[in-house]
Each structure stands twice: as C-alpha cells, then as structure tokens.
Length: 148
Image (cartoon, rainbow, N blue to C red; front, top):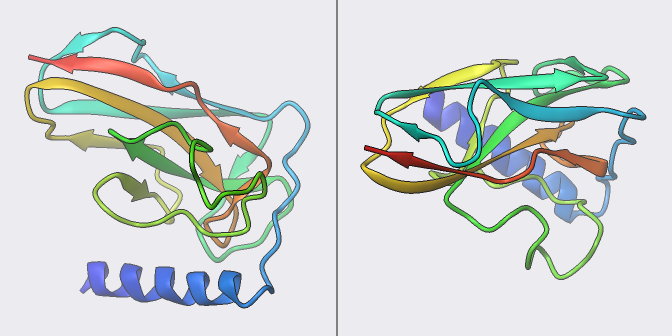
C-alpha cells in the first residue's frame, strides 16, 4: 500500500512538473550533502547502513514546503546526476522513483541496504518538496563501494 501511494504521489508530481508549473527551489548558500562514515573505495559487507549528512539546510518531508529545506534521494548504480539528464542544465523534473533512485520523502536520514556482492556507486541528492533538485543542485560526490 505504501508503495502504491508513493508511486501515485510521484506521478502527481511528475504531471505538475511536465505541465510547466514546476520550478526549481533556490539552494541555500553553502548547503551540502554527504555520506557519514562511508568513504569512496570502502569495502563493506551486506547489509550496509548508509547514513546521510546534510549541512547548511534542514530536512522536511516531501510535500512540505519550507524555505531552506529538502529531503534525501539516494542514487544507486547509475551515472552521476546531470550526465544525460533531460538534455538541459535545468532540473525542473522530479527525480524518478525506482530501484536506482530511492526517495526518502518522510525525512529519513539513513537506510540499511541488502546489496549483492560486487561494486556499487552511490550518490546523494537533495530534492525540494516536489522531489526536484535545488538550483544549484545539492548533491554529493559519487562514491564507489565494494560489497564482499
């Protein structure tokens, strides 16, 4: 049921964005998102707990519009945000919701993932109340981890 509601909400946001009514929310100066205790090149075992760090802004659930806030998205095993996205420099579309784009619209700041053995890439992106990256986007570097 939660999955159905999440998909319905994402579709509603996508419809709004595609109608031309969506705009990017300005990013607070100096805001940054980062991984806590998980470094590029780390070797870990599954399940792996990924903790999200955020500096210079607050966390608010999806759908709640407060200045200087957003919520986390975790990109898994996909190109860095911006490479080949929508064919433009502006981010007026919400991030997709699928196995490569995890949404934390409830304001969550961590997740424990069961990742298969092998190499995986991770990137954090902060989205506004409509799941749209801020202007400029607040995103972490892409890190690569190896699961044994």
